[in-house]
Amino acid sequence: MGLIKKWVDVRIVQLRLTEEETKELREKLAAMRQKGEEALKRYQTAEVGDDLRELYKDWERCPICSGASPMGGVK
Picture (cartoon, one colour):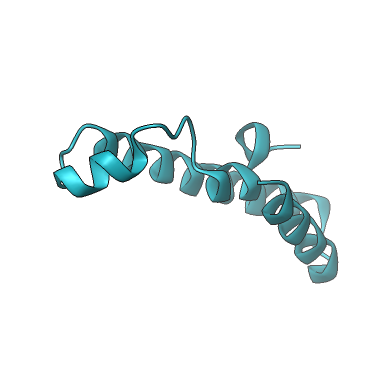
């Protein structure tokens, strides 16, 4: 999670976005995080198969989603 957050933060700086563009990008990342976390819940409830339920049963959150959009994605 920490590594992904670093990469995303560095990339956002490299893009040299305006404050408004940065806010918009972080909001989009937050929306994608929500979709990712919904998918994780589906995996954990076996809506997509027993093998995925077993694989993700102990995950509290997706580290990639959380790293890309910490605290809901808006800073």
